[in-house]
Length: 316
Image (cartoon, one colour):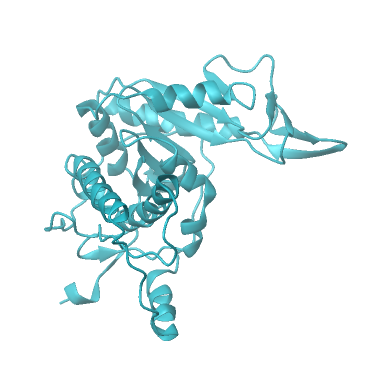
């Protein structure tokens, strides 16, 4: 399961120490999976006691609320060296990685057990990407049901680091990007180009593309505008920090087709025809997390906008 190192402008513990948390995450994940599997094999998974409805409501209320997103439309960027953020680092080994070994319905087989495990892990990932021991950000509950976020985290292995809709401060202006995935050998800038099932996206250099589905047509904003801007920002940050990690650009349509015969050569157009091959190649990458990968993550995180509050127990 890939690691969520930044979610929009929420505070992330990876910002505190990006060299520590990736390996800690992998270790804790393996530890909890072994324990869960052992309990399941021995028939020791227990069904939780019913909780008062009021407690459940309070839990949901206390967890989520959200500050509004900001966007800018700029094509030229000047990069200044970013200063590391100063926050308090967590002190305990497994802080924020609490795992629930109680299920309402007992998993029937190992595949179902893995699914329940990954769904809990998704919640832990979002918790790690929105809080530290002293600070927290208010997360909209929608992210817990975000199928695209779930896809990028649950379908890729642990050695991928994901920034999902990160908000970067460029020339003191917030710029929201799409999806950045940092692998041990390269960085992927990904923009989704999806519409209805089996639709055809007709690409061009114009400001708008055409989405065709049966007899329907509609205009959609050219996704390469966002994709090129994202790549330009990432490239500028890497150059400033003398990083040579390759950057790949992907326009992704998993459920339909992209028709752009003379599209730019530096962009990969991934649709239903070549998706499985591309996806399998990324999943096969078994290289461990590397230093340049962590350095790339650190450089990007230093430019990210972060909105948070201190936890009440840590306020003076």
